Structure formats: C-alpha cells, structure tokens
Length: 336
Ligand code: TYM
Image (tube, rainbow, N blue to C red):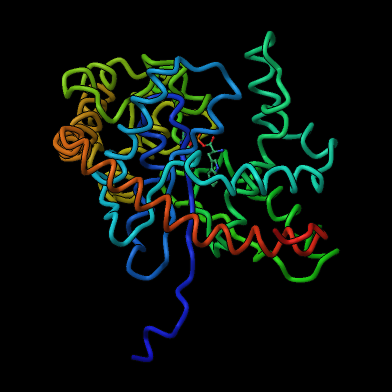
C-alpha cells in the first residue's frame, strides 16, 4: 500500500527517426533505458519534430518512426512499464518550446556543437528550427520533470543547456521545473565510426556504421573492414590517443559482453587484429540478432503498434499538460 504512494523517480529520453537506428544509438542510449523500468517512471519517444530541421523524405520518416517504436520494444522496453510515444502526437512539446525559446539566449544557441556541425553540413538550409532545436529539446525534457536523461555523450551539452534554461525560468517564477541530470553510460557513451574512428558513429558514413537491422553477414563484413591502427604493434591494447580504432573496437566489445578492458587485453594476448576484429563482429551479431528478429515480428502487427503509440501519447499528454498549464499560469497567460 505504502509503495504506491511513493512517487517514483522519472527518466526520459528520445531519438530522432532521421536515420535507421545504429549501434551508437543502442549502446549509447537504448540499452540503458530498459534496465531501470521497474524503479523509474519512464518516458521514451520518437523525436520526429526534431528531424525536420534537416530535410526528410516523408514516407521514409513515417517508416522509420514506426520501425523505431518496434525497435524500442524489441530492445526490451515493455510498453506497459514505459510510456512510449511519438513526439508530434503530444502538442505540449511545441507549445512549451515556444515559451522556452523566449528564455533561451541567442549566444548560448550559437555555441551548440550540434548546431555548428549541422549548419556546416547543410549550408543551404540553416533554418531557425535548427538554431532553436535545444529549446525544443528542453521542452521535451522539462515537461515530464525527469530526474535523469539517459543519453550518449554527444547530447550532454543539450542536457546542460536544458538545465540552464530551467534554472533561468525557476529563478524568475519559482520552482516550476525539476533540474534534470544527464545519465551517461560508462561503456558505449561514444561509439566511433568503424572506418573513421575519430568521428562518432553516424548514419552519414554508412560503411562505418552498424545498423540494428543489418544482416549478420553485412555486420561481419563491416567489422572485418574496420580501420585499426597503422602502428606495427598489431596488439590489442587500450590506448585511445594512439590507437583510436582498436580502442573503439574494445569499447564496443566491452559494452556488448560486459568484459573490462584488462580482460579483453588478456583474451587477445598474442593474437593480432585479424583475430580480434571478427570476434568483435561476432559478439555484435549475437547481441543484435534477437533485436532484429523481434523487431521484424513486432513490425508485422501494425494494429498493436498503433495501440502502443496511441496509449503512449495519451499518458504522455496527461503529464505534459500539467506542466504546461503551470508554465502558462506563471508567465501570465489567461487560463482558457
Ligand atoms: P540522436 O537522435 O542523435 O541520438 C539518439 C541517442 O543516441 C546517442 N548516440 C550515440 N551514443 C554513442 N555513440 C554514438 N556514436 C551515438 N550516436 C548517437 C545520443 O547521444 C542519443 O542519446 N537531440 C537528441 C534527441 C532528443 C532527445 C530529446 C534526447 C530530442 N529530444 C530529449 C533526450 C531528451 C538527438 O539528436 O539524439
């Protein structure tokens, strides 16, 4: 009885369905989401509103959004225990984003790494949405008053600006928002591309990117071709600075097997990269196999998926609405 009255801590995160999910998304984010479903009140969504800051092909965006939901479930997120929803189905996200944009400074947005990156990659489309993106992300987060936001390292800056915006708002209006903490995994926080081990793994370099739905032989090939280092040592040793390719593979192997770097060094002592690379590939294939199979099974049941995202949107809306109502009241809008 008493248990029911204790308010659970809240966790929230999202992924943009702007590309097919890859190993970086899995190890940096989703893998850590399901672990705490019992302990936390969890909200996970498909951040479709964010994707249109870069042009999307509409039918592909639709396909990827649904596939991403199936993948969330296949990765172990039980829709009964986690609120799974599509961001654009909960209008409070854009409503709060507008308010927060008025409490976000031009200077802070100009300093965002993701804005600098994307605006240099899409010079012909540096739109206002791309610039104001962190205010929408702050709204995504603050609406649900989460304690933790589990993300990969590249999103830490966005969680930090969210904290700054929330503190600024609270400084004016009192304690409206809970100040969330980023929750970053020890292994897998930053997975680098297999062909470009100094850049984060991303769909924009498909040869070096392992997608969750890749066939096992495709994954094996990608790992065989992974760039190791030009040192003559040919030895599996963790040295991020001088051997970034090997360090990245060790990090992946560690994240999927749970082995420490020392254990991995010992396992491959006296064996070169030619043995190590296919072993990492094999471990990844085995980790992803059940996810791929389960995703395909769930994807075949469109009615079920529809019921999950409808129910998720309703539950998300109930929480989001309360926060938005409070914010509107605080800033002085007349209650409808
Ligand atoms: P996105 O869609 O780029 O990435 C989704 C999640 O995957 C992690 N990630 C990685 N982790 C390790 N190595 C990599 N190579 C790698 N690539 C991606 C990201 O850190 C992230 O956790 N703005 C967010 C989406 C978002 C969001 C939110 C997240 C929108 N609203 C609210 C949390 C809370 C984004 O673009 O992530």
